[in-house]
Image (cartoon, rainbow, N blue to C red):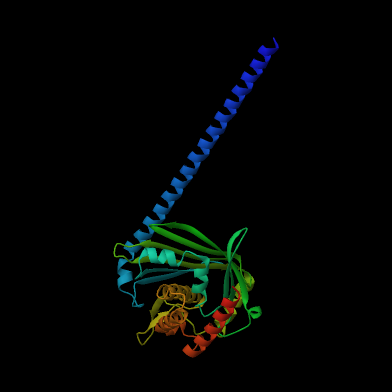
Length: 312
């Protein structure tokens, strides 16, 4: 009798073990299927985004070939109640694999951002919440970091496939009640062996930020303009957009030219070539982008880059 009970119990335990194992295997299979499904959804999403960007490239054909920029580039800007944004679509003379590899790390983006005249410092650091770029934004001349505004941008590679790249830099809060800073770069390969880029630069602002920007535009920024032509003057010269949209267009262009200058000089020791490239291309659009002489810009950036390298 005892042996029968023991056999029964052993049989029950064995059966229970098999049931648990089967349940565990089923759950594992379901998780794997869900993971594969999610991966397929992500792949489909990336394919859709790549197709949409290629569609934009096709629709901008005439604008990319004939424009005042003397390069395949199209720029647009938007102003809402409390938001500003600028978009640049452009073709660059580099293979997609080169572009993707060059802009795939947060450190690469610090090398890009420091070229911008208002960027005083950039450092990338990985943390529990992901990679963050600590960026100081300041005046168009040398200044201590404590006098510059701090901006912490979360860095995310949203997509990196053989046919589509998307990088996102976001900050929920910025200086002077600004918010929702966003720099987004999308890229797709073209059949010509070149790459089509879409750069978005945008942010929102509160009352303090709006007053600060309006004050700037009414004083030292009063004569500054963007790139969008709104009409013609009496002498036939173009009348350019001013105000908040002009501000967004200038900064969007500066960031784009920083990306282009970086791609043109990827070797680590070619920092000064990037500086020269960024400055010379901004001077092509001097009506909008001229701020300081070459010597001033070079000295300032050498000092800022040295400070940035020491902090690593």
